[in-house]
Image (cartoon, one colour):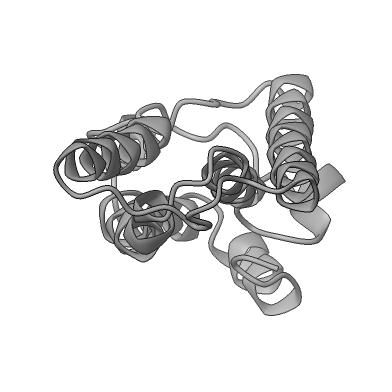
Length: 158
């Protein structure tokens, strides 16, 4: 059994992974521009992008508030004090990451940038390998029966 007091062992804050993906896309876009629509973003595209961005930020804020009210670590370098399974955690085991992903997608659409869309799968793979797997091991070792049941009831994403 892992030492519960040490936390999940995540070395990079998850938002940094999304920012790194965005920076890589931005750098590539400086060399080779790739837009979603060559004529510029249409009004419907801007509305969809803005709605996704706001929805993502809203889900993220709800998840952060839920963690804060449960008085458990928000930053995944610290150990979890409790297993949070209410609020947005009833629908997803990772609503903060769902929110970041939807917000990232919305921003790319709003700004008419295709490279971030192409980098999103890479960002999600890095997130899975560098963060989620560590968090899941930590939660399984910290709350074995409760986390097993939670995993059975609630999907990782949606």
